[in-house]
Image (tube, rainbow, N blue to C red; front, side, top):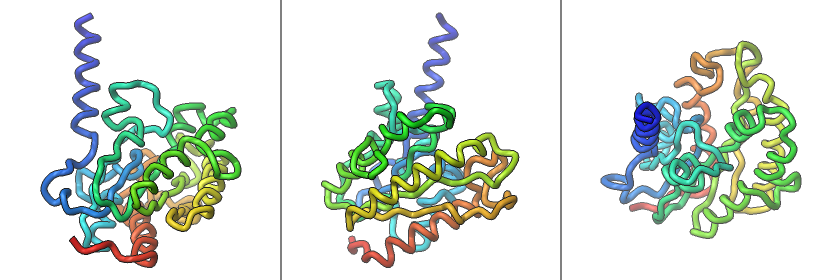
Length: 235
């Protein structure tokens, strides 16, 4: 019993310390919010995560609420409220943009990237008009913010535990692109052509998450969309 309690406290502490950037200090004036899973959160310890790089490119503060291991579909109430459920990472603010990702953990950890048809349909329907991701984007858009949804990061082609998720990732991206095409305030950033086959430089040692180079390249694509679509309002 004591061991279980210690383990539970450790999990809660990890979630609390990793549940994203606080909404204080410079965050009070930020116009860009980032929400999502470990693809966004990776390299945060060195201030080289995707949100950090977008901030440097645009010279605008970005509040990063992303959480390692977060899912779109997540049923546990306590850890879900702490950010393991991506929609719960949202905090009210005068946001111009929300940088968003999610779905990879739902496919890899939720259905093992096998027999995932029902899971995919729950995330986003084939026509891009319904699903948990669509509902989340709709909620964010209802606040007046525009949304840039970052697609699935492919593996380098070998030596990766998510290599077998390639087809599911491609299908998820196709549905996300259809979703974005139906709303002028939602933008989809594809990463399908980011990683050349066999090039491991875009990934960290685990061949799952982005390296510093990978985060910077993804950020450049996100920042380009924001810069071209319209300026962030001055504080």
